[in-house]
Amino acid sequence: MTNEVVVVIGAGGIGQAIGRREGTGRTVLLADRNDNNVRTAAASLEAGGHDVKTHAVDVADRGSVHALAAAAADLGAVTRVVHTAGLSPVQATPEAILAVDLYGVAVALEEFAEVIAPGGAGLVISSMAGHMLPPFSPEMDDALATTPAEQLLALPFLAADAVPNSGVAYGIAKRANQLRVQAEAVRWGDRGARLNSMSPGIILTPLARDEMNGPGAEGHQQMIEQSAAKRVGTTDEIATAAALLLGPDGAFITGSDLLIDGGVIAAIRAGRIQLSM
Image (cartoon, rainbow, N blue to C red; front, side, top):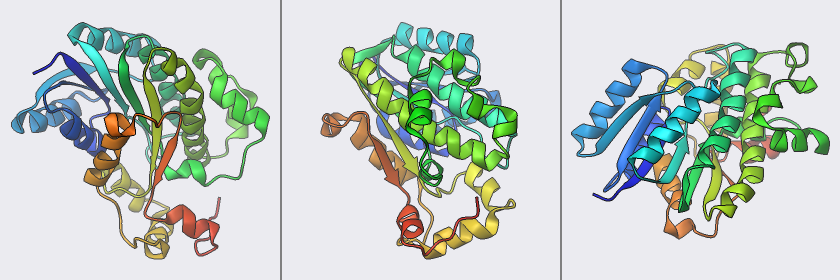
């Protein structure tokens, strides 16, 4: 066992799969707001032989994220940070989605930039939804990428009357994740660390099941049927791709977003899938 620490924020299916893949010989610090979720996930990883610590975190609260970063640094060299926490459109209001999926990611990137070890790497799990919205203006792109986290939710285009529903809030947040990672990768690079995002398509997790049983179920089924893969993805496939972005084979990759969606966005671009935004 080394003194390396893998921080996994979000104890869902993707977080567990990446923690399992990256945790061998390292301490896994598993963080989540839901105590039952984090304990269940920790038990599963421990049953596989991993050394797991747990920590409560509310990603929409800077003090809570700061405490998590400090706890991680106390455990050893923080060589991997994986942010998977988020809310989906059927789970929350637009305000909650922006607070967790947009602000929460920005805060985590700022806080963990202070503790990531030289040679370390970070990964934010975004979504293919970030590729679905029409292009933003250069000014909006720049604001989402570089506005200090504490000022993000005050941007006029994120006001309640400017974001009509949870689906739009989710798409904006996920696009912001991609833009934010690209900008923050420069600061992480100053510490000798890398930072990337990944945009999965439909991966069969509890969150995805909620979406596929919600109002957008028909649209999700169409995406699956019209994609090149014609199936949902698995958490193990996400973990395999994450291993590249987090590990030495991805040492020249930073500030990038990996779209891993079975060809859904390609089918949208080709006109096979029609979106109703």
